[in-house]
Image (cartoon, rainbow, N blue to C red; front, top):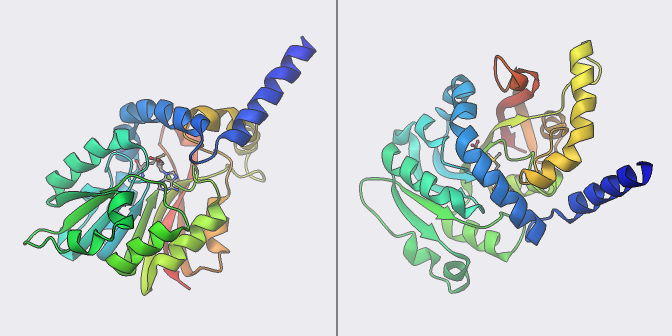
Length: 272
Ligand SMILES: C[S@@+](CC[C@H](N)C(=O)[O-])C[C@H]1O[C@@H](n2cnc3c(N)ncnc32)[C@H](O)[C@@H]1O
């Protein structure tokens, strides 16, 4: 029995370590997550709609959303303030949802591929003009690489970057904070809502939940797109050298059920 438990533990550790962007394990994990998220996304969005209304009504200019999911954030935008929108979402199962939401919101939609970037076709694509702003869907992981540099060179620096429950699943939070800082314009702002680790020094239920999060995160992430329940994302943003004037508030993912235990941080931060 002990041997079996040790084997399961080792297997989970191995899978968790192998669950990196671009690997087969991550692809399988993203597929399972994509299936689950297509049922959960709408409810999760409803629970946080007050927060998103408050936050996203400020979003303006040249906008980047990292990990756009099914495009649930788009309906909170004030379209009069939006010039152009780049929605990066590596999980292709979500693209139809983004496109549907974008069209409902009043965007025209186009797709960008890595081949477009490599063949220098981006500038031509971005010329699409008309009276509606264009939302471009890019289906790759955003990372510090030549493709991202080229995206920024063509789009220009971003006035607003949006992330909604994304830092829980990126490979390296610190690297992603650096990347977001580097693609923002001088007066650019990050808008975030992220679920985070429960307070290990809080009430008894918070402490219990904190250790529960620590315990289940390795296996949870393997099956759910690398989602970590135990990240201290709020503190990481507050202490990040890439951001200043961080305005941060706390709430929970839902008012009832299991999710009411899941703390969420949200707010905005200026490029340092
Ligand atoms: C929990 S989902 C949230 C989706 C959406 N933002 C929402 O609030 O409904 C996290 C999303 O981040 C995406 N993601 C993870 N790492 C990413 C990266 N490096 N670049 C772009 N998207 C990423 C995943 O594909 C996934 O769709």
